[in-house]
Amino acid sequence: MKRVCDTQKYIRAAALFETHKTKSSGRWNKAMSIFKEFEENCATPIGKLRQVADAMTAEMHAGLAASEGGGSQLKMLNSYVDNLPTGDEHGLFYALDLGGTNFRVLRVQLGGRDGRVVKQEFTEVSIPPELMTSATSGELFDFIAKELARFIATEGEGFFLPPGSQRELGFTFSFPVKQLSIASGNLIRWTKGFSIDDAVGKDVVVELTKALVRQGIDMRVAALVNDTIGTLAGGKYLNNDVAAAVILGTGTNAAYVERAHTIPKSGEMVINMEWGNFWSSHLPVTEYDQALDQDSLNPGEQIFEKIISGMYLGDIVRRVLCKMAEETGFFGDIVPPKLKTRFILRTPDMSAMHHDTSLDLRVVESKLKDIFGISGTSLETRRIVVDLCNIVATRGARLSAAGIVGILKKMGKDTVNEGEKQRTVIAVDGGLFEHYTKFRSCLKSTLSELLGEEVAHTVVIEHANDGSGIGAALLAASHSQYPQVEECL
Image 1 (cartoon, rainbow, N blue to C red):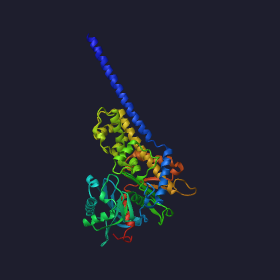
Image 2: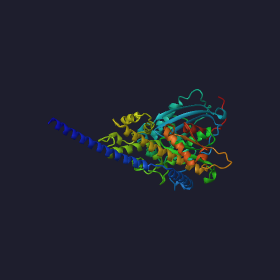
Image 3: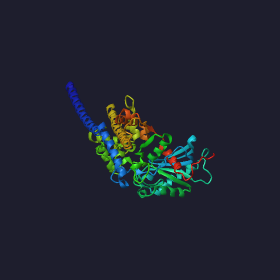
Image 4: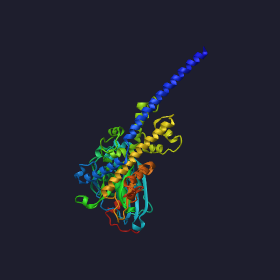
């Protein structure tokens, strides 16, 4: 009798195991179906990338031809920078770099062609989240001015301001601005998580200057630029072959030097493309990108930025994992609550998982536990997470490369002219490019793939570390109210 009972128990246990196995297999297959569909929809074959590059070039032409930037997704804004640094600049200059969740203040002592950057110092300050969304324009700029005042107070040995001179500052403001002159511009809209309604339409230099006065700071804003223009200026100061600049960080943008005859009523000018707003039917946009866009502060805008920049890549991965968890039980019967929290997976954490080289993917295991509270994942599950990171990063890097090729085509630098010595340097800055190694490597290899071996040898991607900060200070120098003569220190 005991044997019969044992046999029945064994049969029941075996049946339960088979049911669980079948259920698990079904869940896995469904999860893989979601994964494969996402992978296919993110695909960037070379033909598609060429279409994206051509569309970028066409939009650049349309943006330059259109009045007030209408008729194109690309604003193609005149930066009013017609005086790029030459290397002859002298004196003490400050820079304020506002373009994300942190801002930096920097000072440089320039020593002319021989001395170049004699000395520089900077500090970085985190912006409280409430000042990014629920404050007034005055409150945000007062906070910035107070920090700037603290920094000025530490000005010491090695920095020299001639008696009676006013300090001058280059203001890097990395949001869409309708530039009115080299030192004035009205905010068009906020991006990168900022939303301060009363600042839209206002001259940001006037707002900053009023805050400086309230803090008792005697300082002239000599140049208003965005981080891309600053990076271009900083790059050109060090390397005369620099023809364009790209930012790949929290957000993304590009700028380049446009030839005189293409700009009505103007000479050679640095153009701020605002390429984050680029859109083309050739972009591989998925349901997850569309959902992210709808949930954003600016739905329907900055589509290119939302699929290639650092603010969004991690959240795209999270959204795919969330769907897999909800529809297939990918992480078990209960959907981890934190998986539903927007932007909880930051791109630096995504990068850490993507670069995990341990055999058992310990970094992935640790990140899933620390960020989402997900424990006990299998190695197969962790491999899928790495693959998702790879899909999202690869798409972003390859589309970034296609955008750069679009700029090179517009400048006529995508071919080699016989007998002409040609070298084109693209200055690139931003945390995504600097720290996400696989993203950077993929961008460079895709650029070579698109250009072909002969042209690729003439195009150099150069990391312009801290280009936007030093660039703003250099532009303050090249647009100074004082003659650029060498001081005796």
